Length: 173
Length: 115
Image (cartoon, rainbow over all chains, first blue to last red; front, side):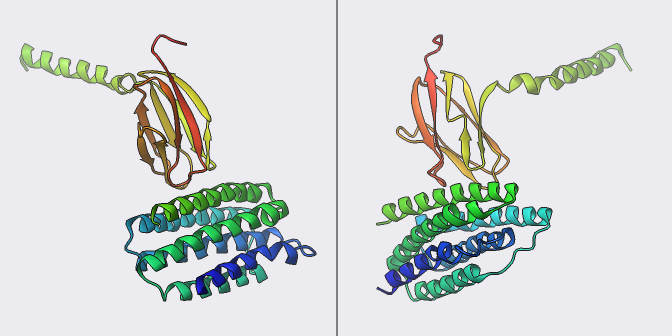
């Protein structure tokens, strides 16, 4: 139940973003910060899975999350440097970070299959909500074409991860 | 230096000169597919049986090229690297990236002699 509540809260966190952005569309510096934060949080989730899970498929998935999001965030950092944009912390990034910390604390209480299931279902939900935010808010709001293009590639990456998480969850059931 | 020694040295030089052109001709021509921007291009490629297909990974993340239905091939490709597969059997082969299953495409292999 705790896990389910966490998922709902996590989804609500990003789903609420378009509403908060209705009057104040996020600027490129804020968008860069949100996208970067979303990647960092999934790297942290992957590291937690690697510390707890003994399931080979779950570990392979977690390793890929760490590797992919680190590589894409490095690319994002290079881009913001090139564009001379300083990522700007904002309410959405803060809410995402707080929510992820709560989720990590929840998952830390679990072991074995219970952890694996909760981690994978959170990965599906997390990628789904980030995809929604990218599609409805971040990509349409980005004004720099290079940032927009990186976000579009990021969306395909997150969509791929969501499918991979779904496949892994099915295979480990 | 005897005449034999000179001849051997010259043979070595000639052999080396011939070898220098060898790598290009030794590597068989391949039809290329690019994995880039989390997409596959072209989405469908037609080759003849016996021809080689090369996947080039231009993304910053690992990809695989994994045949879906018959496990005809399954290869991991690191960023900036490429992988080749010789298409031996005729048929239509759907493949995807195991890490990013939204990346899907097809290789159609025609029987040799057919267009």
